[in-house]
Length: 183
Image (cartoon, rainbow, N blue to C red):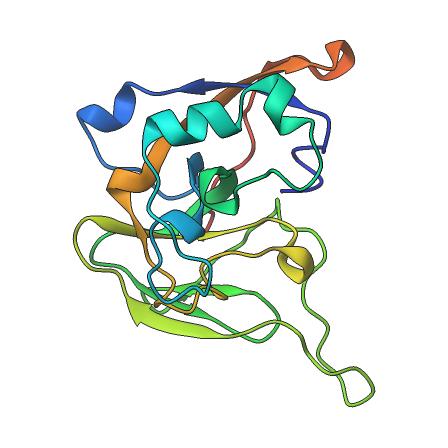
């Protein structure tokens, strides 16, 4: 999610809103690892909340090699909601319902030329009810919907909440007012 979010940023995640409504385009959401919901992934393991709480306990999490990728949380931006037709080209640009989207927050678009093999995948799909498509703002270096082998759809039930407030570092404290989609 660089540059809008930095690696050491600490965020407040609001978890109530999505109980009464679905995510909206442009919102930054935190969700359970694809290893916990994408059955096509080699290391897929559905874990209980208790299991993940134990594995993520600070003392256990510090021991090298004891991590469980199905207990991780990811943070990405919603680019497609139920009913949308989303096309992502080889540069990582989004065409939403036939309209090009001006994503001013995107950094590092994918490189497309004859000298460098493009490492970004394209995507072309209609989003079914109960799902969203998420992409990272750092398109050249983001493991997001384009790369998940089970189809790239994030079930809404896997969303933990939305990022709304940065409380660390102090010089970047404040509401996450990252720009949304513009046509």
